[in-house]
Length: 303
Image (tube, rainbow, N blue to C red; front, side, top):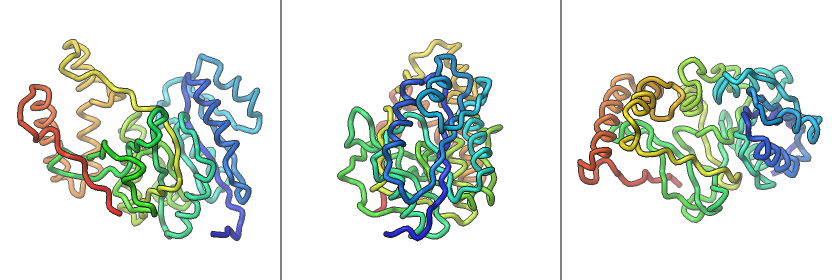
């Protein structure tokens, strides 16, 4: 596909105390094949104390660094970057995590997909740093009887479709948002989802507004493997209560899970039912009961 115009693209990422990882990401962006595009990078440095902002200024003086006080976390940090990006009137905003290492044709492939599919939001194919053939956090689907959003866990590059495929939600590691979509639906819901689930709620909200969600398998990035949290049953009681009930920035927080179900389910009724099922499934899994039900197989990715 030949691009007939030079698209303006703002690349946005929130960062916190991952100086070397952030610099690695920026070096990867520098190597992207994007001569047809006018790209500008905005880094929201949310209170880093390891010299991240200073290192960026020294090696990448063209990058705009916005300082935070350490309380933005993922969702509000991304919103700060998006708001700054919109002031520059781009065609697209590429929201990324700072652990991304880009295939050189990644951005070209994402813009091509967006152009070939009107009113579309496009996600990249996410692969692990240490297992480059392993695909993760791609194609979440809603399944009430699973307990809400179900992410395939056993995908590989060989099992993926070769062409862009439509999905129900996109995880926010690397997402190309048309500016029109952002202006239509607003920003991420940072008040409800300060750290986890803001991305899936955001793309689900766009989908409900008529935007189609695609993953472009030719747009590949390599990411730091997800942190493996200890099983809940191994936590001391105080840490368990904090994780499940108190700290809204913890992935296991039940109120966050309830809210993402409530806001993204096909209906509030199904969202509530799914949450009850989720709690039952987690309890049975923790107690080693329930047979195979708590360990359902992966959902299939549609070609």
